[in-house]
Image (cartoon, rainbow, N blue to C red):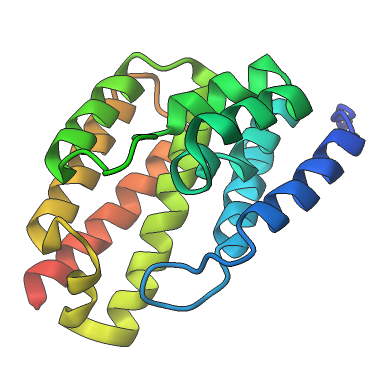
Length: 197
């Protein structure tokens, strides 16, 4: 008979993070779809937990876009006070920018690639889960919308493909794991669809 190790239960910190995240992103929707943004954050947190991430990583997954999308430095300080230094450091590691106006698209992406190349395993896991869910959503939108899906993205088809392919190379610099393998599989599917259109 197989034995299973008991995984730590999520505490009231995670519950508080769910409530805080839901309120923080209450008026935000996914790009071009109108789906409440919280769906993405919940999906990323689920992927992190399924990959063995701890509570800090799961909370950071819920909050990975908070600094970027919901208030910059002020929100970072709220996250630090509510959830601690470890969570805020993971969120920082996943943040592309925090100043407005946003830096140019290519500059942001190149900076993010370098940041992930140097990232801790915790930041890498949350980042991978984020990009994996994004590409799953993009593939679903490709099937629903066809070629026009690329108009939602600042980088267009070519830039979006370049960014995901570049990210995959960065992730593959570390030993392979399920999230990286799954991202590689989905990027291959996206390339087939993009080349067909």
